[in-house]
Length: 468
Image (cartoon, rainbow, N blue to C red; front, side, top):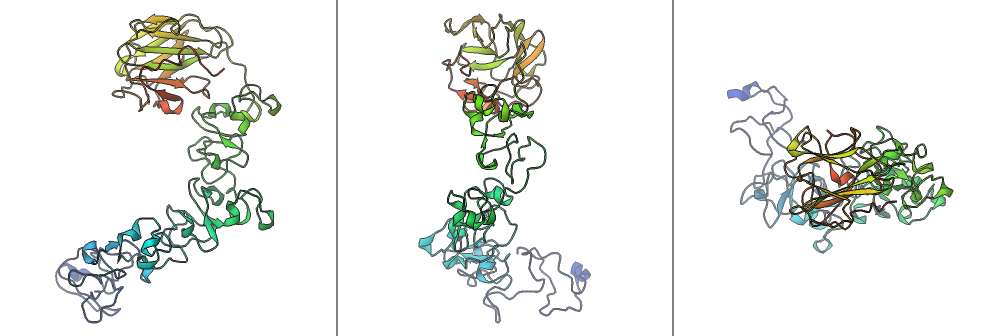
């Protein structure tokens, strides 16, 4: 509803014989004017504006400039310059005032803030009082974000923000979107019994707050196993992921962190499992053959670890020469022939190599900078560590890659990661859920997937894996 050319032929009646003059003469009878940049439902005939005899509130472009500006509840407006009395031209709120839904109507700004302003007369979020009626039926794309704003959603409809977004007798559920095939963080209007933490079998529930009017699990999850959206809009069963929250898992399961490798998925994937799979205890009675592995905690039980299974468990890049690497041997026998190789500034060949001594099974080796002030322990050996936050560091044993920090052949500028969880001026420690190294030296690397960050010069965790 903005600009138009200065010369048009307009029709007040439904049929037009012809137009002539200039480039507009090519317009066919009954065809919309392609130059009209107006609301989707705009007629191509000229509307009467406020102040013109016969003009009615709700006509296309009814609101004009002073003295014909619209007051609250009047439209259709093009911009806030068409509104007076402290109102603004709000987009697509026409239906609240009995006009086409894509009409723009002058109303107070609080009618568009997605908050229930009861003191200003609102009966629902952005509706009621000067904001127009709270519509009984919401329109648009069901499940769209804020679908229920300015109207009252029926049972099973969302996304809602508060109970006042729902029709009488309903409440806005919390993150119950998957019960209705919507994303996990969506809230859907449901009867109160669907939000009471109990199974109401007499009302059709087949589980606690699920089934009947409370929605279902949305069917089996489908798509690419391990994909970021695999559990969205459904309920992942045991061993399925990637999940983001417990709400995306079937009843009785939790979304475990970084346990994808136990199920043949990428290490950073989160998989739904029984709660005992996350308690850091070996529950033999539940089928576990190790701490939080085996039985339902992994797809095929636990394979005995190889004789050599080493990876970085801690990395410290502090101020001045306060640098250290901690390597953990998760294998069943001592690890020998291992080296730390440092790649400066995106290099593809090592710039520095540090030989490691034999590392006993389930033991760590800490290499500290020779000019650091670190004692022994925690340091097992000292060497010249010239790495900075943008240098990739790899761990090899007998010329086989077992782990990498960063991305070989890529210079990130100053560091990988952000804040404390980064490779510059910080200490990062491998999470206990990580049991193998990163053997892809060229893929994008993000420490937040497997590491936790700590303050500059924090060496309190060196010499102890702390996960046995």
